[in-house]
Image (cartoon, rainbow, N blue to C red; front, top):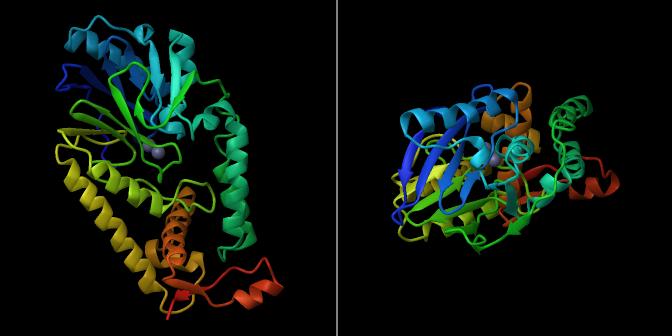
Length: 337
Ligand SMILES: [Zn+2]
Ligand SMILES: [Zn+2]
């Protein structure tokens, strides 16, 4: 990931000023929040809520005053819109809303992440446990990964959202939402005249993490690829502004690169399965041996690509009869004949 912490100014073709406000959400992990200066002052995403992240947001306002001559402070934010329900983007929302009284909105499919945070986390953990228990990993490794996955439990206190949206214009703003599920169920891109806020859906260098839809609905490679096609069809976009990394003046190229990248990974996954393998073996074949949280990310990425191929009939499970007798057995996948 490219970490760049420069505050940058943009202006849409309709004359709306936008500032990129990068914050260090987690060590060495910069998230871009954006301040949109329309009739209403709107902040897109809030960072993680960790101390450094909040301090960085305040520092961005200092830069707005000293370098860009804006008479603005955090307190002026009237509305917060979240691009999706990942904690590096929404974790700061309690602090921002409590400091400002801003109204809060998010896509309808991610509203429960904010409103019922621990419940959503535990329910996805439930799906994750099933996935990992059938991945061919040892029970001990699965327990370690599940424990790791719950690190954010009790770090965020749930709050109500004031409005949700799906497709089209968001309230009275000039922002138009496009639902782009895949990386996250309620992921949206938002168009502001000739600017597209691409959130984590399209980034300047990397592509976002994938996870199987069997764990959480509306995630997975199939939705992600469809959502890339959807965004590529949008007309009149001059610049893409992502939730991480740099501004993209070549958005359609970046979309094509992201599609090719995942097509390549699907092909690699398929090629590994000339012999029967578990998800864990596919993950090792794709990414080698990983450590700590990266083991989980690699498993989810491998599982998402494998699921895509299996659901489209390109793979079969060779031990389905043994699985009938032992429901805890990990499926062995192989290329379909
Ligand atoms: Zn994300
Ligand atoms: Zn992100």
